[in-house]
Image: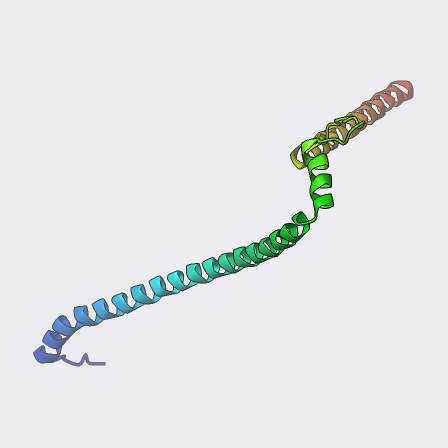
Length: 142
């Protein structure tokens, strides 16, 4: 097969318009990628803000009910007794320690570590007994 000869005008056109076309394609691809990432981050931010809005709305409704409850004198008295250790005449306050959620989680983790440690010790002891028993069998069979 014979090679076709490319005219000089076509080569010049390719040299001039080729880099321009490559630049335009790269620019369009870059713009497309950056726009897509911006859109993705904005959608995530919108989800987070909508979740935050819903929690704020529920907090607002809880606060409104709390305001309505605080209009009642009996509720205010009971609230003060429970949270600030106020007493009526003749009452005594006995303070008990209540664990916070973090302390409860920590004690639960500690309990699971203790359980795992005990189980691993039991497995180790069982394996040790099995190995000793096999060694005795081998000695007695010789």
